[in-house]
Length: 144
Image (cartoon, rainbow, N blue to C red; front, side, top):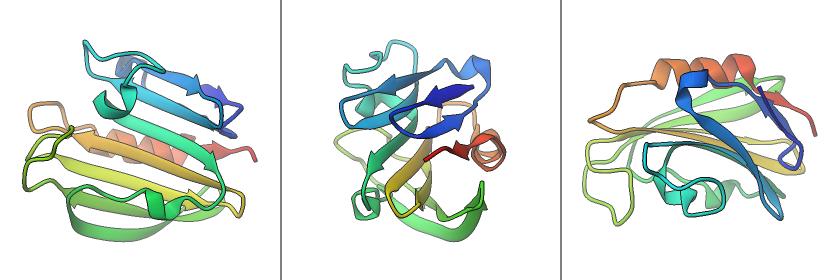
């Protein structure tokens, strides 16, 4: 269980995801990195397959999916309304994820903070989509 104080949330993922909780000057975040990726504070934004970020204010417009939008579904997690987006990366992008990836983005705003939970399923990696959905919907607690 990660208690991210700066990000004002608690979140739990399976131990084998090798995730770590990071706190920066103005944001709190959690990353799970592919082997060989850099740890907190050193380029993890581009190399994480799981990326959770919480920042002050309404930042929803800065969090978008990177591929073709497949679905948009309203969700309620820990009493907070949000949206689950699913997109598919049809073409190549300058940064990961690679072509053929699926991206799941949960986006919440509680009136003071924006919470974005992103999972990228790369075509050559195990599909953790169902586990990711369960981890967000059952283990996320907002502590603003």
